[in-house]
Length: 153
Image (cartoon, rainbow, N blue to C red; front, side, top):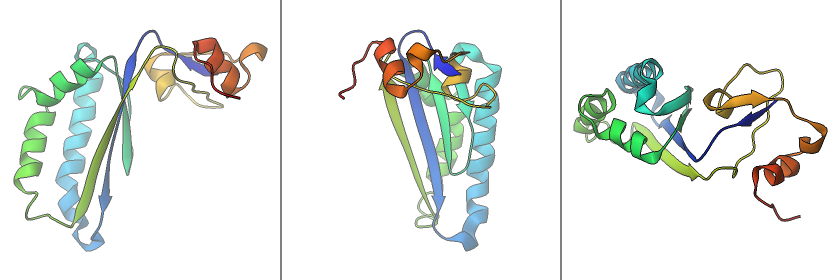
């Protein structure tokens, strides 16, 4: 199966690395907060989060637009803002215990490729829809060409 999704979308990666394992307990509030954020996003599709692949050490979020991601992240009414405010308030005392990062990718319509074998709908396949791979779209290069891009040989 392969993933198809209408229009542009956003991929947001977020992760954490424990640098001092003996202080792992200091990461637990953030992990609990992240679980709450995932529940909130899954319960509220109008927020714009299309799908989430929660995980450790990296979680992947698919959003309809950057504007929706930003609106959710910056709104005190949503779970992200209070959780990050609490995390940042303790950042100095936790300095060196963990590393924290995120990356945001704005993906134009057709500028992606995703294939799944023996998988339930997940990742982009859960954010969009899964369709069968055909002989005309058997390779990544063929799927990208079909999507409108033309990867170099």
